[in-house]
Structure formats: C-alpha cells, structure tokens
Image 1 (cartoon, rainbow, N blue to C red):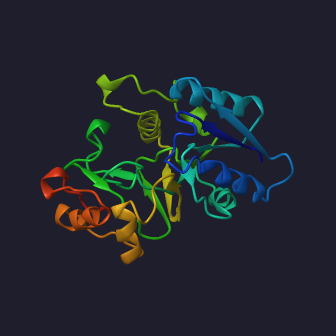
Image 2: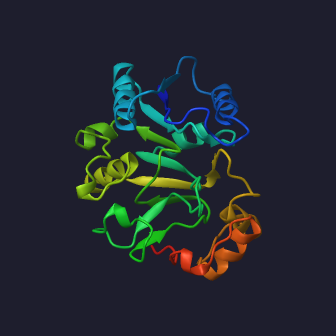
Length: 253
C-alpha cells in the first residue's frame, strides 16, 4: 500500500484573519498515520490551474505506484484522528469526509441528485437532494475534494481528462463535479462517511448556521426550510430573509 497525499493549493495562507489553520491539521494527520514506513508521500502543487494540479497529482501517484491518492484542500482543518486508516479500511473506490461549504449559506457539500439527468449547474435547486448528516457510511452522487481518498484503479475506469471545469456548456462548474459525473457514468461508487466531519478554515460553531443546527440536533439536520435557517443565520450575525434562500429538500434513498 502506498498513498499520495495531494494538496492542490489555490489560495494558500488566505484562510480567515487568523492565518492558515491547515498546516497543523496536516502535520497531525501525517504524524498519526499508522501505515508501514514510506507508505505515505506528500505532494503540494501551487501556482497552476486546479485542473492541471489535480491531473499532475494523479500522474505522480501513478509514477510512484501508489494504491491510493488522498486529496486534501488547503483550507481543511480539524481532521479527525485515525480518519485515514478508517478510510483505507472501508475499501471503497471513493470515500470522502463530511464537510460544510466555507461560504454562506454553509450548506453541506455532499450531494445526491434528485434527478440523474439534472445539470450540476443546478446542484442546489428544486430537483436536487441535499444529503444530511445521518450516521455511518452513505452512498452519494457527488463529493468535493475537501478530504477524499480515491483508489488508483478508479483512474483506469474513467476516461481522461479526469478533471475538467472549463466545459460549462456541459453543465460543470468545478473539477469535482466533472470527476463525480464520470464516476457515475462508469459505475464507480462514491461514498461519504457522515461520522467523519472536517472543517473549512474560518468556519466554526460561532459563524456557520449549519454547525449551530448540528450542535443542537446531533445526528440529523432534518428537513431544512428557509424559515428554520434564517433565525440561525441571524443569530450568527448574517442579516438575511427567507426570500434570500432556496428551499432545501430532504434526502431520499
């Protein structure tokens, strides 16, 4: 077993006014890895496009005969202890940690589609389903690369380019959306461990309404409607009305 820990830096040291909180979490992750000596290699790529960085990381993983590639974004903090071993032991093609968006309105970033043919451009809309944090490992349709472990043979199952974001005419706005769609089309399963939650730098219980909700309702966000979200956002200092938010639908399996 060999894992390439890949960090494609886009906005390094630009994470909130307290500086970059990613590095301590990264060091803790590496120090806590219990695999054989030499089984974890770190690669940081910056000053290039995200698509090129991700493609380059995969090719590096191929060159070193890695069995897995772990994508970790440079604004990831509070990485749980033992998460990498846990993900390896799941033995899934793709498995991701649960996370919330760094920007308002702080929605979870793990999705299932309400309609398999819907464009990813409309990922938060009336035809999409937002996965709520139940417990355990759950099958999903889209994962971000906040903290995501991928088996290397996945890149033999899906066609190149593996990552793309410029083809907006096809309905993709991000490289992770493009990658996940390729997985869906080629029967590669995507999973999320809803018990393993990582944070975006700058997002904590004092600033993100969804984190406030999660603390009050552990295990399930339930059905979130604007009328429920607005008071939480206002409590967190965000002045917003119900008309500013789309309705969020419950998960359906």
